[in-house]
Length: 296
Image (cartoon, rainbow, N blue to C red; front, top):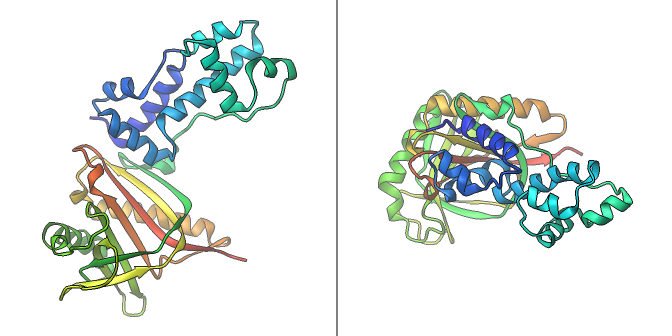
């Protein structure tokens, strides 16, 4: 089984090499021993677009060379790039570029293309893959979970242990979960002077009514957030100190690079989110969020 970074890198290469070979998600998934569904999820999670849409855009972009630099007729170009029918190619072309192939040849209009995706050094955490940041608007949500006071120097060890304990033993007692398969590890009340924070392994709930004894609730207000994404070849239970340390070092590097433009609230609140329903025995996916504001 390929490591996450290696897998994604090879998938991008295969797409570029297969633009005239009718490359598709099914064939790529078979090559790497994945289900097509999981490959689609991994690609969307990593690159924020569907693999089918990306292949279509890259195929149409590649066809521009033949269209603009040769005298080949449109039908032959359509067939060469796997469209089968001239009208299918023309319709797809117009949706992509806003103009038909024939009119583009006549007018020489400048069109916006889809460049090939690439992975960079900052996307690699060992054998794992790491993406971000991107800015998203996260709507208000409520959580119920177990509160833990954790010293900073032990957070990378104690938080994963607390998360596993909650997931295995405690979450079943929370009855009004909205997404019962989604784990939210919430950090708040960060006390720099006393060198500790509050960590709440939790699930999202409809409201904060009827919180059971021993549990705690919290509301996260609608916020613009920085979002980072992680893919590792392991079970989500196996997110450990080494994994977390690498990820937080990458996030810290980002905070240093943008501190003149943005204010991140990761010294006040942040949370990780894991959809356990996406785990298929091969790759774990995790998201990390913190509120962010733009400096005026």
